[in-house]
Structure formats: structure tokens, C-alpha cells
Image (cartoon, rainbow, N blue to C red; front, side, top):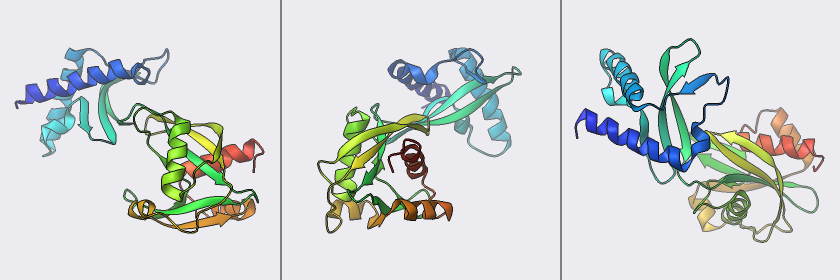
Length: 235
């Protein structure tokens, strides 16, 4: 495949993604950066960036605009953008491959204790305490995703979920829920263990607040869920 063919192919997929998810490609009045949607301008921006990459000894294709990577879980997009001073550049964004809604759920037992899981995160190359969360599947809404993640990660079925709010992560909107859990299974499921979850921890509100204050919890979804639940007076 020639350079021109590769660039056109990536921009064709970009146009397709724009048609599928128009809200992600709007240019609202007063935007700090304008997404360039004209094909000729996109190609020109890519070629200018490619010259800089070549000069630095890097592959020119690193400067391509459009959808530059896609797998079953994520899509990486390189937008050509125009800044307020007129300068043209690029921004990388990440979307979930599935167009449904990702979610996270803060599980709470009848006695008020909250459930955390110790999960190994590949991107961090380490463990962190967090709440169940995940991408959507088959276009599912946030509530369906939350119920599925509770079942997969802590083995809870039939939890009553309450919407807490939304947050943005990696360009996508993620819904946050409170999950009312009656009982916890005695041990983790094999599926959870394979995913890298090796421990469950039950915390009182005071204990969780202490972990957050001590910097032992850094997961953004957990912190947002805690903030929303606290602000709403639910914990």
C-alpha cells in the first residue's frame, strides 16, 4: 500500500466514524481548537507533520490523520486541528470501539460498607483498589453495562443500581452508579481471577475516606463515584 492509499484509507474510516458519532466531531462556537474536516487540509496537515517526523528519524506514517489504530476495544483518532492563532496541528483521541455506554458502579452493602476490588492494571503495570467498571458491549446502555460488570467482577447478581452522574474518560462519557448489594459471594469467580482481580475489600465510609486521603486510592472512577455519592448524601 502506498503512502497516499494508507492516508486516504485512514481518513475514509475517519469520515465513517464521524457519521456514526457526530457529537464527537462538532466545532462549537468559541472552541479552543477547531477540528479540520476538509480532506485537502487534513492531508496537508499530515504531510507537514510527516516532514517533522522524518527529520526526527521517525516513520512518516506516525503523522497520518484519521483513524490510526482500531481493535475490539479502542479506536485511536488523530484529528487535524486549527488553534486560535491560526496554527495547524494535531490531537490524538481515544474512543471505545463499542458505541454503547461504559459505566462504573460503587457497590454498597446493607450495613453501609462499600466493596472495592484489587485489580491489576496493565497500563499501570501494578495493582490498584477500585470499583467494578468496564466498556459497553453490543451497544448496551450504562445501566446494563454496570449490571454486567458487577456480575463479572464481584459475582453479584440482582443488585439495585441508582444513577449517580457522569464523567468523561478518554473522550467518552461514562455513567456512574451506586449499586445496592444484599450479600457478597464467598470467593471470586474464575473469570474475575483471569481478568487480574485477586482480592475484595469491604470498607466503611470512614475507612474509604481514609484510604482516599492517604493516597491509597487513585482510580479516577472510584474517586468520582465517591465524590458523587458523598455530594448526594448517599454514603
